Length: 550
Image (cartoon, rainbow, N blue to C red; front, side, top):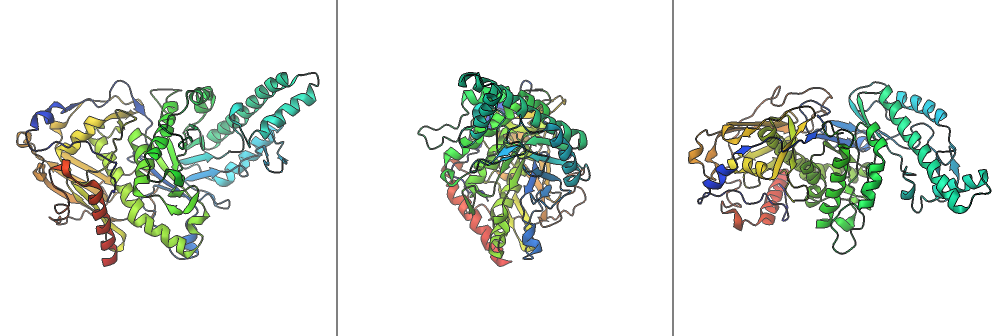
């Protein structure tokens, strides 16, 4: 179902004289050196999918509910909606956030943090938290304060109004100061007050609702938006990394990090998009370990199903690889899909969203989730997540398109066809290592001793395979799998509850006859000559054809 000319599973081991290479990589250390990741928010769900868009209008107004059954957490950023598993606090919903209207210059709540009353802010914030989070269930709490930044120098135009107001305040209080002296004092006063506002708000939230993971949207940021320049490599400037290091107090107080990787149309289906996202997520991963390398913070990456400068244009599969695929391969804890009212403004927009979910987004989510869980089972004993050995590579956690196909059938049911092979497992070990959950000691895994693969997603989409124990007869044919059970699922089922779930249990497993020609007409075992783009295009149109047949 993937369509990518850029994605590569590297060279899968062929049947022509390659067994020597196969057994070279069989002994795989589960953890290289010391590398840890945050444990999952919800048991047995190593990668969290969250939906944070006001698409409830599609169901309430147009009777066209979008298929969000694959998302463990679903919430709307609407102001009047409360008690959600994911809560987004905008500036007007949490306390008395000081800000300046950049166009009119009007100050609200003091305008700058050193003038505002922190006590009044916290008193109001306590009431707001009680209103929006009446019960302390497990969930995400994201504070979206974007009017000013706690680092003085990062308040460039038009945010420089905060620097100007701070300098004016110092000059009013100290008329004998020079501009240089006033600027130095203003910088210190502003950063101290900004730190107090952000830090104390986090402390309050954690105290009142400790079961939520608290953090600020767009923190950390990489400021790598210079993709219009020649030779763009996506890297975060060293100076910006040092400034992020200086925000150690913020990472220490946060219980989750929420970077953003929104794409605009300039990055559509481009290699720059992957570089842009990769470096932003990697910077968040780096900072998640600053406070405690053995117990890093979870990183939940904000992305959008549409482009930031064209809300009617959905991301292509290539763009999903650049955003979601990159985030998973780098070891992020989850994805948060944010959206505006434009997604559900009209009946047509709701129809467009449903079609996008059914044919593009949901199949890709199934693909990367099952691949990530299979890798975790193989390399981590399901006690960690797979992370790229070389973070700046183009290795992704995808099901091998030579062996798998995903179809959406009648009543919204998804079916997965295919069989994992030994080469698939070896690709995991060649390109990824296990980042173990905090405080868990990794063990070495011998791929020769792996006899079964059993991974499920959303309780019902499963790959259950028994591997032949006689590896001496190994070849690249699908004879490596003696039997495979597949399940179908309607992702229109109610959103998963925030509770422990055991993959593979409490669901009906449906054995199906695999279509012998499903992949054979488009894929040849001599993979070096495979036309990847053509394969994915055929799989895509096969999916569309099935849609029309049902």
